[in-house]
Structures are given as C-alpha cells and as structure tokens.
Image (tube, rainbow, N blue to C red; front, side):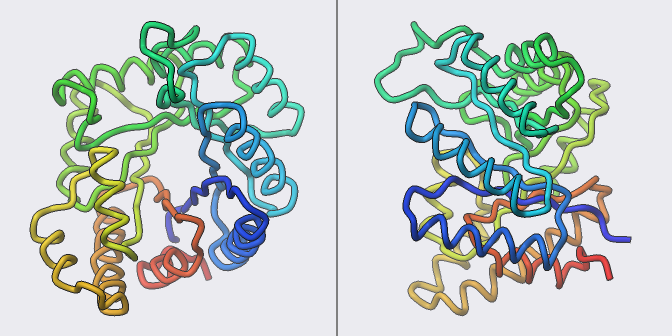
Amino acid sequence: MPIPVSCEFFPPKSADGEARLREVYQTLAREIRPEYFSVTFGAGGSTQTHTFDTVREIHNNSGVPTAPHLSCIGSSREGIAAILDDYREQGIRRIVALRGDLPSGMGMQDPGDFHYANELVAFIREHSGDWFHIEVAAYPEFHPQAPDAQTDLANFKRKVEAGADGAITQYFYSIEAYRRFLDDCERLDIQVPIVPGVMPITNYLQLARFSDMCGADIPRWLRKRLEAFGDDLDSLRAFGHDVVTELCLQLVEAGAPSIHFYTMNRSQPVIRLCQDAGLIAD
C-alpha cells in the first residue's frame, strides 16, 4: 500500500493564475488522491486575502481537505484568533503553523504578539483546543537563521512540546540529511511524524534562487549536473525527474510517514513522480 502524499500551493495573484491553479488542484485530486492540500500564507493584508480566497475555493471545490499555512510574525492574538475562528466555521481541521517572515518595513523590535512558532502553536491549542491538527516546519539541514543544528533542534522540540501533531520538512536532496534528522529527533524523544518535503526539479535557476533564500542545500554533484544542461530544459527535467524519483523511493524505504510535494502550482511533475515512485494506489 503506497504511503500518503500531500501537495502545497501558493495563492495566485491574477485571474489567469486562478484558472491555472483550479485546473492543477482538480487534476491532482483526481489523479493522485492526496491526503490534503496546503496553501501558503503571505504577510500583509493583500497577500493574506489571496490566501483566504484560495483556501476557501480549494476546500469547497476539490474534495480534498485543505490546510492553510498560518504565519504569526507581525500579528496580534486577536487577529490570529479571528482567522482560526473563520477556518473552524469553514470546517477546516488542519493548520500549518509557522513563524513566517516579517512584513516589509517592520523591524524585529515590533514583531507583534508572537516571536516564534512555538508561541503560535501554544496559542492555537489555547484558543481552539484539539479542533486543528497542527503541522509545523522542520529543517533537516537546519534553519538558515539558526546559529547551529543543535539550537535548531531545540527550537523544533519546543514547537512539538507546545502541541504540534506533526512536521513537514524543508525540501532537501540528500536522503542522509533526512535520516540524520530522524536520528537526532529520536535522541531528543521527539515522537511526532516528520513528513519529508519534496521539490520537483524543473527549473535550475529558480531552484537555486529558492534554495539560497531558504537554506536548502543542493549537493555539489547535483548542482554541477544541473548547471551543465544550460538551456536544454527537456534534458534537465528528465534528469531532475530521475533524481527526485529515486529520492522518493529512498524516503519510502527510510520509513517516511508520507511525502509532501512543493508543487509550484504545477500538476504534471508531481503526477509523474507519484507514478514512477509507486505512490498512487490502484
């Protein structure tokens, strides 16, 4: 029996983007039957509105449970409570709780009522009890703002102790990074399911830019191979597909409870990975 999968989207900002995403989530719902969809959350008013609208549409129209991301930095307790109440009224049962990035122009001297994700997790439990299944972020190669891996692990444990039910990792391309992280968590008696995040490889320049921003490592051998393809996108995507398919197979062998795909609002790369890694139930 294949392990479950889930898929992440970002809110589109145009009518064309909305139409494309509608086709994507409908196709993924039909072809791979994911456990849930998640939707990223932007800081600031307009991007938050895009998130709310996207969550509402996917939750109501996809037939797949939807998990909104919820970032707390720069937010008030009252504002977060209102969002939680709205999601509860919609029948949403899963939240991805994150610290998030500061809105543009806001300094750390005024981060709002929440400084860290563990404070958000504790507040969700205080406000909503066990209504929401809470996922938090995990970093097998440790958070880019953490001084070292041990500090990042301690931060992760605080989120779990605050009431998180599970974790989704930043994407990675080294199975050893995931295995080491699981071993480290076991030593700290962290027992929640830790779901690996997987990013399909379809555009090297975009992937390198994202990786530099979020601290995800592209191993040197992989970076050099991807660079060598230059403008030959078909060959790059074929190679990237093989690399990520093998990673998915290794994750299943390593006992991953499920796999979370960062779709970039595209369906076909994810469908092909699920097909070739045996992640679609007959």
